[in-house]
Image 1 (cartoon, rainbow, N blue to C red):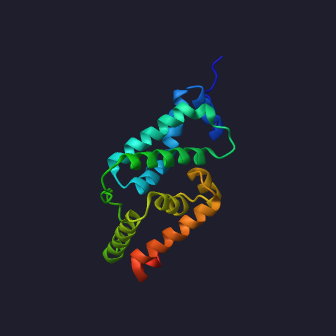
Image 2 (cartoon, one colour):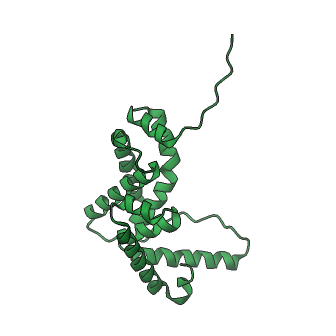
Image 3 (tube, one colour):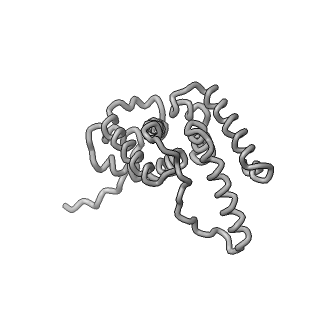
Length: 190
């Protein structure tokens, strides 16, 4: 009797971490693929240097591999992974003794056929990137986790291992600094 091939059953992230904890390489690959884009975006915003982003992302996933057995499911898997990435990024920034260069991102594919609109979007993005570069790593992290990753203040507090009130204070000062750097026209983007 020939059995039909089994369909892949969607796996809960907690189950996935459980498999990583028992050193299942396939589960780790699935976890890596699932979180690589989001973690890379977050780290790029914090670190502002492409070569450092890849190194810290690898360090983050190595810690996740080694410490998967410590995950206790009191938070989401994403919160746990972003907390690891945040701590690894801060460690990398402390090791650095030079200023961070402006980010060198690959150009985004044009969304509109209007050249003027596309140019305005590129200019706004460049201004935002420049303003973000002037924030502290903690302030950049709060901005990125809120606006680009969609985390709540409570989740950000778990990731950054600080009280919710501190997250709100960091957000207040980060937004105020961004508005000052961007001026009237750019502040509307916030």
